[in-house]
Image 1 (cartoon, rainbow, N blue to C red):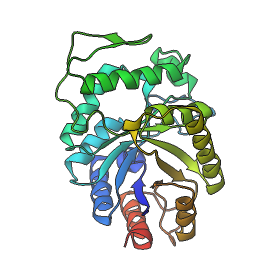
Image 2 (tube, rainbow, N blue to C red):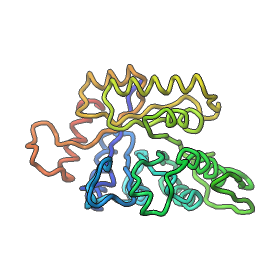
Image 3 (cartoon, helix red, strand yellow):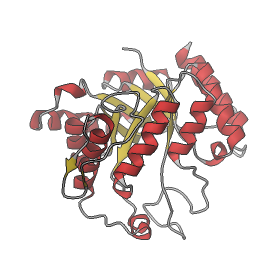
Image 4 (tube, rainbow, N blue to C red):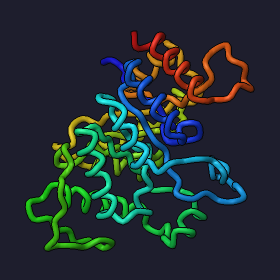
Length: 291
């Protein structure tokens, strides 16, 4: 099995500027990367407090809009959210937005989701963190219903509708591939029962092995719907990824590595991680792993 490579942060920092986003997206596609990925926080605590990973002044475009822009300047590379915090969204509004992205990208969208973890963010949005797991599963089911049913209807605890429809439908039916993020037993269960894949962020090989074991145990306990197929495993590695590390991740069953841009080898650590530096990183990865 050949490892697939994605590039993270296509909506953040340097890539939050339109010219740089386009520059990096085109370079990644030309280099042979399989996918581009976004992160998400709608708002951030100010002042920054743990576990917030980003200072409040950090630039972060909306993931769906950033990927739509990337779709317009590329033709083949896949486009993934890594992740969308699903309990913070209205599922039918989000379904419309993401179906539009899948149509405009001609079926290149990957729907990565998570349940969120920043209480100040939820509080600012007026949304309770209670039962994030249940909301996430209902929202996924409701979105798949509006995307795929001849007469869409869904009735759950958190979302209920019938007698409505929404077009265009996503190109990918019954839904774009769903990738479940998270490193907990509940996340592993959601991946097994509701997702085509699982995404682990900032993991080394040992932590990845523990997560893969968690997914295996969940698969033994919970039934996986046949239409989801074999679970695809995606990881953003912690630290640099040399050939030995790629091989180790592959041995663990990882199908895709989504890399965080870093300064290329030999660059001064005080140099800016601007568009040129990210493109140089992309070309460095391609020379090592894709050619």
